[in-house]
Length: 289
Image (cartoon, rainbow, N blue to C red; front, side, top):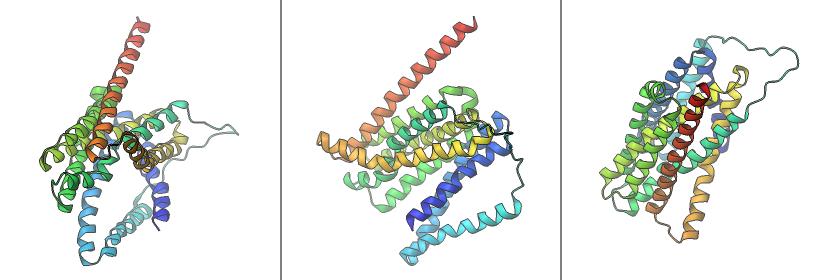
């Protein structure tokens, strides 16, 4: 049943993002709405978690009734979503995706694999360090979602200010957040780390989506977003296996080590991306002269 649900989400999610690209053609509108979408996703995570907790308090399986929200979404789409302008490619010519789309998707895979421990390992870390209980985990992840909500709301302004350096900005926040969690001495420090990571995470994801849309022909937008999201999910899937094997190879299975490793890689990656973008900008300015 989980697999069937995952297939359904895998079909629906690219379309929710693709609708923004289909209905809004201006770059600034797309960027702002991609950020808003990220905020709504975080709001949805907070609300559905609360509802699932209330339902589960009655009986554990009742938590899945939260997916009944999908019926409301279905009705809204059926009766309220306007028909979009269809893109017709004349003749037998087919538009293929450029290599940049696959490169962005690969970066998304790496970022997703490195940040997945915030979802999968936070509970283990809090228990391991005696920082709290299940409620503490819920509070921590709620702050993560709230930070992501804020990041989504201001994403348009951040993107217009930093442009291609937005990726560096988000990666640094996520990396620093992981390092704060690594050296946390209390639950409050873990929450601070989760806030920083949440802000960075919800900056990077719309940044990747926006760049995918920009570098894709309109007729291929939904397909390109589907590839990106598939890579994001694949990164989450393989992350535990990779990190567990690294931990075994280094004979360090503590949760602190996992967060330290991912945080360090994120920080180093942000520096590499920054230097690459800086060099590219310098070369472009020199060519213009």
